[in-house]
Image (cartoon, rainbow, N blue to C red; front, side, top):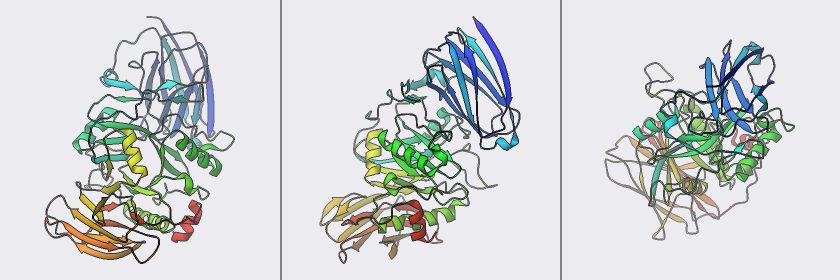
Length: 486
């Protein structure tokens, strides 16, 4: 085995630093990294051709990191882009918002001709990525049209998850394992500023590539994105830390074929504070984020108010949920509290089949409801014709039939019409709940339902049915907050 090794240390004393090292031609490059103090640092590795080869978030939960980059995708670590290891100058770029702590960053480089051991995960991966002539990389090996399950159905999923590639505690394989235990059909991998380049190959679980663009002023998810997004604050437009940069990033997601979702918009201190965000660049809002996190109770109710304001203004921005899972299944955010797990809440999507393309299209059409419990059997008719959530209808009378998962005498369904509670219907045993909502008295109107326990705890909410259209008058996020009084 040919082996070349070098070690370098330097202090992180500013927001953005970079360091270069040179390599000779080799089959395998290995990096070992460590910080002397707790830090939150985004790390990017660029090869001599300015191709991005690795992304990582170093957090206070991680003290050391070992990464392998090779031509063979099976050998290469998660979040790397495999390919030849060219000789020349490589660059490590570090963005460290907590630089005031001045941690000492140490890394060693090893150039090898072989790798003696592989992890179990590495033996069972599927590669999605390819280096690009553009900045970053693309995901040409991820097939959005690949069908995992056939048939129109309510598919159960999670649009906000994390792994140990950023600040989560679960490996990619553990995420799949827990998702199966929760009965999920799909989830989106959304680590902080890291787009997955590969995943565990499991024929029974649809995993969709995504990323949580994570700035100091708010977070948004890019769902189904097919190339790296340049979020760096060092860019001329300020990247993810500026109003101009965040609008550019939102537009970049659309160009990539992804959906844009504002995450936990009212959950302080991670709430969305970019007041110039164009609402025309937003597809969905994460109305419901991890219900086991105590502060989310208030934040979710505020998000519902915000959403109703958008709908009243004529926007067709749909609501989804996300567990924002970070912990191990047995852990909770409060002592003795409920576990925080992937799939809580779960987002049900009515799609023609289970594929990334079908799921994302259905979300963009509003064929979605969110629940903490099992599936709700939903039948909606207008003039005796079946319609779906998210539909626009011409007649004014909308007939709902809801059937719940078991005997539920402690549930109440609230029927929301144009942002106000029109009526409340108690759920009685296992009997289907039938209700008719009249939207005929105005040219533009909408209705949706939400389910609560009798004590007010939110259990589920649906996306709306629209009657007619209205030209929106609220252009930006700041205008929306002002209009909603939040």
